[in-house]
Length: 280
Image (cartoon, rainbow, N blue to C red; front, side, top):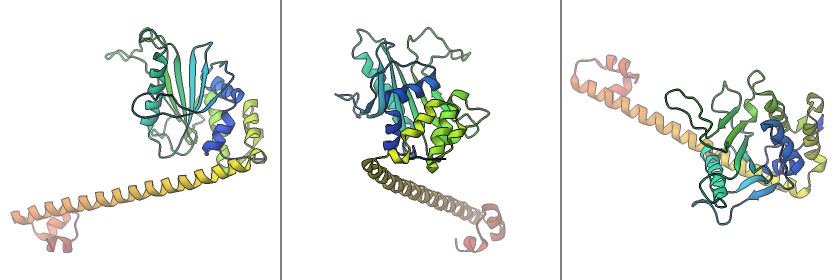
């Protein structure tokens, strides 16, 4: 067993995949694309920003030879899916700035890793693909000749993998990322040499004091966000229960006004207690 820092933290995620070799290995295995890159930009921003809201990409690499941009994002529990749609579209729009027409000169692919949130379809593969492919309205057939570039936004939920459904090229990477969350990994369970290199990069002995400090800051922020989220959910639940009870009481009042049902019958019909009906 190897002691590792968990990939739930941005600082560790960027440490692991911010190196060109590891970034290219991940992309190569998942997308079957051989990237030719010398640099992975950390917290990439466009200046000036695209649209009214600034974007910041966790990890950003451009393969100029193959005219390809790949972004890798690490999502927090509170992040909405729409945020990454906006980022994807922002990157696509930015590429047109250097084009003489409206054709996208570069293919943009975004990989978003969720290490906390579960996939919205619990019986799926743990991977959702938004592929921007035009389809015939009647037949659902994909029409390949409309766009020259095949942009993709891919959501990857590491805690929702299914051995029977998750594609093999994704499965081992998702399992490896998920296994780091309890800070211990069994290297013998993995055959991919790049995953062994990943574990070495995030081994606890390789984490600097500054990185540990940033991990603690992230942990505190996550806890605050989680508490706020749960508090909001509880308030919403209570508000919903109260609203539902008020509607039942209004129905009971209407029954009483009609005078055709006994109080016992009204209580049975509405689900209110007999005492509640009598007090109306």
